[in-house]
Length: 300
Image (cartoon, rainbow, N blue to C red; front, side, top):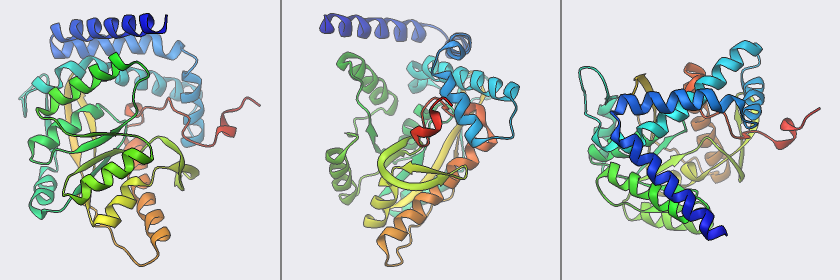
């Protein structure tokens, strides 16, 4: 029964993505956004988003939180609708679907440095745009992934990402084995992408929105060990399937001799950058995960 269910799920997912691909990119984005905006806020997981907003942005009233939850779902739906179109979106289009880069000079600086580069971002805007755009600037990067329980769906996602990048790059499973492989890859001069905005129970405690948050330390640990540049960036929207990758100036990791303190300081710097992005456009972040201690999500 499990095999039959997984096969059915994978078939439905494949048909859905095929249907989205037959639509124009803007229409696929709008359809995905409208559907998720209607259904998502009615799902139980939206209560987690509401709690997260209370914790992170306590000055918001109930009406503002409700609006941001709707925007969060709309962004997720648009991201799904745009996924099969990423590879074909035009660069610097005058209007309509397409993408552009703010801060492209920072990518060129990183490329010319000859050093391994770690790209740090979060689930903001259409986060699937960053890998193919950075690859087009000569810096294709490997990334971590959390494997879907359905192997067919997992394979479909990998194929879409590979097609968007136009080349095959490693994808490392989350966990100690994947971390060791990623470390070797960096040591050989490769580049690595990290989405560092989700809770990592075996990470380190840093602050996010003034609250302790267990945070993945991989970006900081790897950068310090291999003197890799860290490039931070995120994607925001200008319209349906019209996306902007905003790239920040490179961070040069500085080792002061106390490894634990160095890792924490660099991890905190990345959390601060993430918080700045979220505060600027809160409706574009994926608020649906339990980001802080689980005790904060218990009903009183």
